[in-house]
Structure formats: structure tokens, C-alpha cells
Length: 386
Image 1 (cartoon, rainbow, N blue to C red):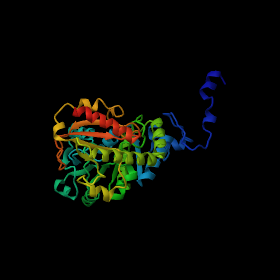
Image 2: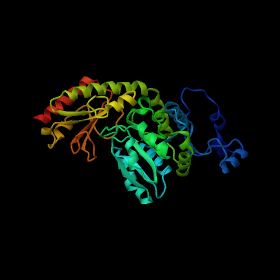
Image 3: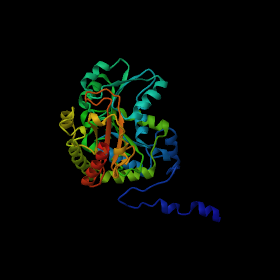
Image 4: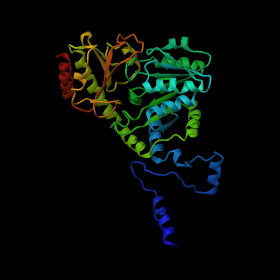
């Protein structure tokens, strides 16, 4: 055998050896070899139950998806390359030309833009529900309503929907119910236990936990799995193996990290609630939150993300002296990582909270010491005051 041939095939037998490790192997592959010609023929007919190509998802992705199925009690799960990719795939899988969908008004901005900027071009009409919707959604449903999309609480304005009531209406009318459950994670709210058909996670956030991975997941019940799996197959939708490996590692410590985020955020939010310049703290776990009773009924805990508004005298002024002076809060999008972050902006969405048109500052409370975070916020607010 010539040297070039030996180089091409060197190490192949050793690579196929089974080695038992705690974590899954990390494959970098497009081609997946069949054991036999019969298996290849089965794959050609769509009858092969194994993995026939890299886009089918390799070991790390399969292990991560299996862990998410276990965590959520789902029938199946697919990992995709980002949160919005997961959202878009769901909306494409369960709609067709002529359909009508209902989206809660407080959804993640890119979700809104995908509905109005992409689905519209393909004849799917979107209407927006009140952010605190419940069983009253029945009045918004049309004959061609195919899907209802919830985000509870909203990741910017923190309204909560009555998810069980909406899911029941959907079930009675044969409508697919979808929930973006990133804020609570499956640890603190399980959509399937409340009757939801499809659960979406931006795994970029709490699941990976270190602000260095872009990843999304979609889990479904048995009724919705085949349609979603087929759509993913048509798009060859998959996630990077390294990202799935890191997400699986993050999943192992999710409970410990989330508990710290929860307690630290409650501490900082309580301190802000007593500050002389703060008008309102928008945190579902606080009794002052308009849907606190819903949160208390349905959720097992809270995460590290909440908002607050300033009193009238500090509203229509330049907030840069406050935000730019913060040393421990990074100014950037996303959340759920170890680093504390801040964003700010006005939201036009209708609500009964009383902050329509006001600036909402959103805090992601990370892993820093809470006393240091409070001192940082205090000096920033003092600069704004002066």
C-alpha cells in the first residue's frame, strides 16, 4: 500500500474504538459512515433510524438534546444556532400561507420583526395580544388562527400571561401554543406541565451561562414533534458541536447558578425599591408587580433579570451620566451570563403597569457580590441626581 493511501486511512480503526467518558465525544464531521450498504439504502428511502450525515446532529448535539428532553419532560428537542433561529424555525414549521397567528405584545424584538418583516411576505398575518393576556384571547382568535406565541414574563417589560388559560383555549380550538421560556428556564417554569405544545429556550443565556455561546432549543410534545422535525430536516437545521458540548456542560450547573442569580437579583431589586430616585421596580416576584399572583401560582422561582423606572424628575433627561459611570454593569445586549449588564430604553407597548412611554432600565444581575453592585448603582444614580 502506498504512503499516500496509508496517510488517508491512518488512525481510522483507532478512531472508532469505544472509550467510556463522562462527557460525550466531540465529533467534527460532515460524512458519517454507514455500517452496511443495506443501511445506506434505508437512508435513501428515509427509513434509516441512525445518523446519516453531519447535519443530523452528532454526539454532543444528541446528548444535549436528550438532556433538554429530560429537563423539560418533552417528547423531542432540537438545538439550533441561536435563540432567534429557534423562534423562526417554530414559526415556519407551524404556519402556511393564509394563516393567522397571535403574538403577545411583549415578545423579544426580533420575534416581532420576524413576524412582521418575514412571515408577512409569505401571506401569514400577525396580530398582537395584550401582554397580560389570559383566557380573554378567545376574542382575538379568527377562523384561520393557527398559532399563539407567548413570552412570560417578557424579557424587557416583564408582563406575565396566564399560560394555563391560554393553553387550554388553544387545545380546545386546535391551535398550536408556543412559549419563549428563557427568563425562567425549565427549572422555574415548565411549559409542558401547564399545557403548552412548544417550548423555546435561548440557550445563549442561562443554560450556557458564560456569554460566549449562541444557541437555541425547541422542545415539543408528541403532537407537534413530527411537523417540527420535518421542517428542521428540510432546512438542515443543526447547531455547532462545540456549542452543544459547552451548553451541556452549562446545563450541569444551571440549578446552582440560577439560584445565585435569583437571590442576588432579589437583593438588588429590594434595595432599588427603597431608593429615593426610583419610581418602580418591575420584578414578578415582588408583590408590587401587577401579575405577582400569577407568578406565585405558576412559577417555582425567579431569575436574575428585572427592570426599574425613575421618578418623574429624572425621566426626560440625559441618562448617560448614570449609565456611563457604572463600572460593574456592562452596557450590552443579552443576559443570563456571569457578568452584570444594563440596558435602557422606552417601550411603546400597551400595558396597565403605568410605565408606557417611560425609560425602563433592565438589569441582568450576574455573579458579582451584591454589595458591590449596589454601591456601583448608588454612585451612578448620585451622578444623575447632581
